[in-house]
Length: 193
Image (cartoon, rainbow, N blue to C red; front, side, top):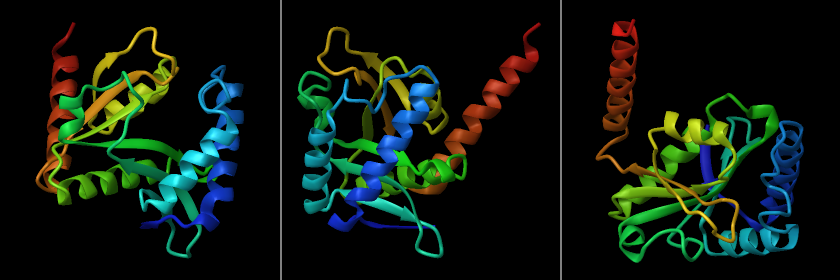
């Protein structure tokens, strides 16, 4: 898998992925990616601006088939993160995987790419806001080494559950930290009655 900067020509694919994800989530009882968060028009404007700024990325398979997207920048919706939290962080936005590639590690590769970008820029944290009612998404980010920071109650966006992940010195260091955490979880559950 390779990851490249998105081009304006990727916009229809990214919009299609959002619509497909919204339909799948709707079947699961969630309104994530619907207009209750960002309208289609606002989503298109944000993605267009992000692509033009060089902040949106596309994961492709070895044959050049697009599999997913992520945006990484320095901006957050007002009222979610403090200036101090934003000071040393890169913010992850709009990570979407093509439904045909779900479960193939695309999200992991995109998040690892975001971490490499943060490391190169001297940033210490990756941060993101997740749809507050999507517990499965929260568990996914925790499985990717993110820690729940807080949920901002009464915020205007339904995507107000905040997560952070420490940017490690190397990818190998992060893998070791995740493996150690999983070992401790297994050890603790094995010793429980």
